[in-house]
Image (cartoon, rainbow, N blue to C red):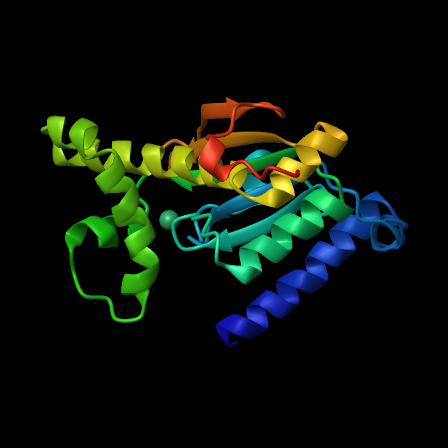
Length: 210
Ligand SMILES: [Zn+2]
């Protein structure tokens, strides 16, 4: 059996398990999508949003990219954010990074990764912004870990720069923004930062008429 055929077979057994528990499982799920959470995570295969948070299909709206970056010219991310916030009215947006992130490792390696270089520049910018703090750390592993944490915090801050979040904060007092980091070695999610609706926005990023 080819590996991909195994996935299709596993799907059949998953469907059976679900229907055994609740014969209307898919009927209910197909009718409505009403998640409370938008997850912006890394594409890394070891950090699947649903499994690590113990949530079911229908509970988390998900966007993933390399190194969980909130790039304000990324139409894909902005479309997901817009839909999640304005239509689904999610209550929480979580940016989740993870220790051992290949994207962050690649950025600090200074290697030439072709097309990926442009994407990794976003992480290098976080390094530049926090160079004083990061350069004081002597241990290379701790340096990488701290950059991973700071990257999450900066991406949460980037969310505040969008008119999507600013409008929703004014109109609905939603969503709360969160920054988390996941440990590949222990499976633990660590809470790094939380920003409540109405939090201060740097004036230059705050839209006058929002
Ligand atoms: Zn990663």
